[in-house]
Structure formats: structure tokens, C-alpha cells
Length: 162
Image (cartoon, rainbow, N blue to C red; front, side, top):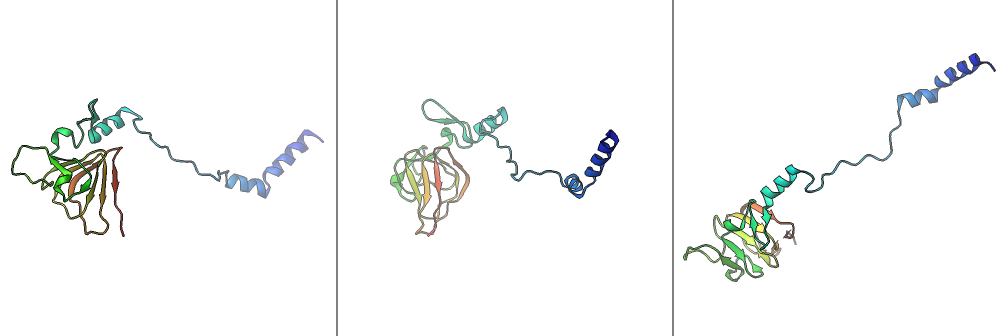
């Protein structure tokens, strides 16, 4: 068989219906590629954003900076219990007439190792930082009125329904 006949045969093969289908429908993988995921602290911008929201933990356990720094707190949970109980909270301000329960405009911390259960409709507080467990009593009509809610990485925010 000569070179010319081989060339013509290959040309005829490339015009076959199968070859034309391959040209029209290029190979596509059956598995779709996964999207690119960013890992926390992948770059300087993400680090700055994280610090702006959560603040910086200090060696003594306090938080500086962020949306709810320790210096801005007016109430913190001292023991586990319902939101409406005065034994759950410690007032951190200097006003002797302040309510023992977080009221309008309060900056609230749910401390680590405590569980606070919202058991009523709360007053409109300014901020809540959840370092512990904040949950809702499913047997009560509850509402947490808050402008800014931050759940720290070690915190838990739990809503259950009956």
C-alpha cells in the first residue's frame, strides 16, 4: 500500500460519523470539579477581617478589639441558668440602679462554661457575644432582640423547636 492510499484512508476515517461526533462533543469529565475553598487565615485580608469581627484573645483570656471587646461589656453570665434569672448575670457597670438582668442597650457576654437559656422575650440589647452556650427554651414563647450577635469559635448558639 502506498503513501497516498494511507493518507486518503486516514482522511476518510476522520470524516466518519464517529469522528465528527467526537469533534462536536468534546470530552467532558463525568465528575464536576470542586470549587476552590479558602481556608481560615489564608491571607492578610482574611486575618484582618477575622480580627475586626472576633477580636484578639490575650494571654489572660480577655478579648481586645472586635465587635464585642471585653471593655464594652455591661453584663456577663456567672452561672448557667435562664436569661430572666438575676442569678445568671453579673452587672459590670457602676450604676447602682441598673437591673440585675440585661436591659435595653446592654452589651452581654455568655461566658465560657455557662449555658444561658432564653426563656422569654428579651429587652433589645446592643450586643451578645457567645463564648459558652446560648439556647432557647422550646416550651416558651421566646425572642432574642439583639443588634449584633457574635458566636465565638468555642461558643454554641442553639435553636430547637417542638
